[in-house]
Length: 270
Image 1 (cartoon, rainbow, N blue to C red):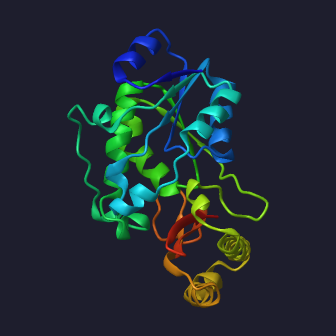
Image 2: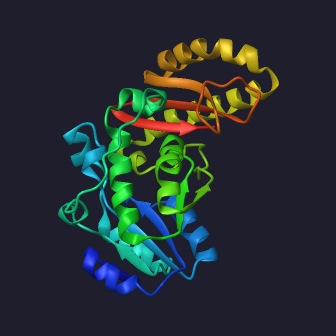
């Protein structure tokens, strides 16, 4: 595996390759990332993984500082997976050139975008930059960050003529969706997150059988979860899978949640 830290060196290295898959990450490589890498390796001749913790998508500086980092462990995992390239640029290098600014319209300021002001603008900004640098025609992303996936498809897929390959959320045996942020939780809080995930999975199953009744019961579920597990729920909503509008249960839909547990924000969808 070649580790590349500058845009200049990356351009020189990959300029003759057209069949490259791109897996963007912020490090903390786990089984969810591994599934994306393997999906790319099945279809592409070369796979490039980026590790870049993007400061512009964090609402609080302290959150950025606390974000889990273990580059040595990440490199060891990527080498074992036979990844072709690891791109690990500096903030200065990524942000050294001018790039389009993104402003979300009212219709897009839902779910995480409603409470995390500027978060997705930061995500779109950095992805616009990374995709401009790497120029891959195949991007691999997980469905756990479903709103992020949706917005990148909406704002960037046509611009770069890129195929965005979405991969299912990977869960550990206790139902919790794999996330780098899970490393900030001890066993006690992971157990709570596991029980919450199981309740929500059952709620999703119930909603397929009794959609209208389940939708009416949603506020009660929110109160139940907050009271039982001492968490603060940002949102708990059924939304259309295709356009993220409030669901009418006529099309494919998902149940979305964001909550804070022991000062750690977790998101999920079912």
